[in-house]
Every structure is written in C-alpha cells, then in structure tokens.
Image (cartoon, rainbow, N blue to C red; front, side, top):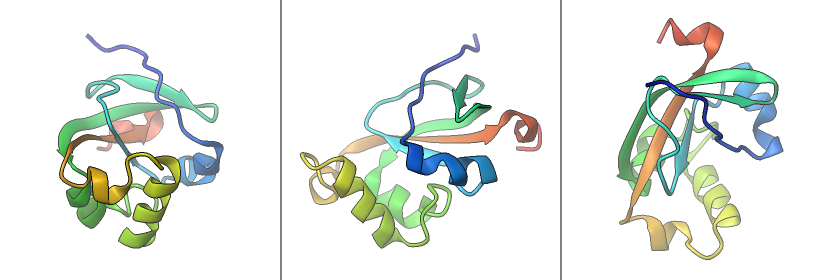
Length: 109
C-alpha cells in the first residue's frame, strides 16, 4: 500500500532537488518503499527504488544522483552530517539507498 512518508532534507538541497540534479539519498535506515510519496521544498516526490547497500558502493556508483560532483564531495558531506559515524566507520556497514523523482517525472522512470 502506497503512503505519504516523511523524508527530511537539509535546506541546502532545495535547488538540487527542484532542478533534478539530486535524485537519491542515502540513509542509515529505510524511510519507505517504492511508490511512497514525500514532500520537500513544496514539491511532491515519489520513491522509485529503495534497497540496502553499502556506503562505499553508493559513493562510487551513485554520487551524481546524490547531487555531488565527485565521490570526495559526498564523503566530506557525509562526515559533516555524521560526525559520530564517519565514512570510514560506516563504509562496511549496510545503509539504504533511496532513489526518487518529482511526481511529474515519476511516470518517465
């Protein structure tokens, strides 16, 4: 059953999400399932994929979808928002990769 979920984002992601540069987020826990919807920055998004992975895999394969220009940018951001579980401490542990699209674009995914 599809549902509305809360998937919080820092305000610095507004432009990247609204422009379509950021289409994924990595979290330490699962926030929803494919088809679930969330609102961010006045727009509705839909989760298109959610699956467990490892942080180093996401950084090397999906840093662009995360809105970063390089893997190093992703690592620096992760360490800034997770000072108690840095990239090096988290790299071998499971995380959840959430891919999303703006509702008007979701049907094209």
